[in-house]
Image (cartoon, rainbow, N blue to C red; front, side, top):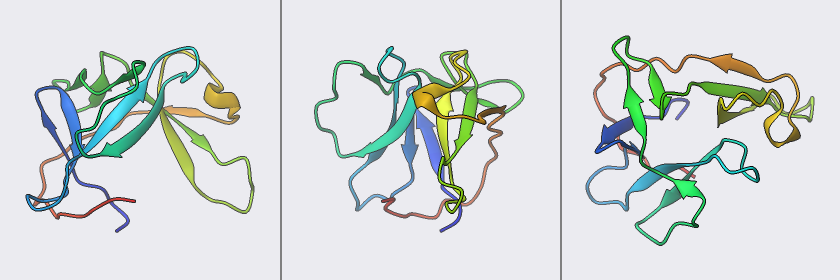
Length: 119
């Protein structure tokens, strides 16, 4: 799919996989090593100590935030690849050494959930 369906429960952000599949949680690494790296993990295994899953909120305007911070997107360094990576906006202009990053607002909306296992 070209879209991802998320849901928020107890300040943890999940990818919607449906009841029969393992959960997929969104994590964030705000350490100096991670610099705001966002990813997801499948299942309920042990998290590395610097990874955080709790702290996601939706503000009054419907914007997704992590502990009050917005998001930043960075283009691939390979001009042949037209993808972007998403990071927490921790005030680092070049997270992970990426260049050309842009802050953005992740606006949320209610929709009919479509289950999918993301890879």
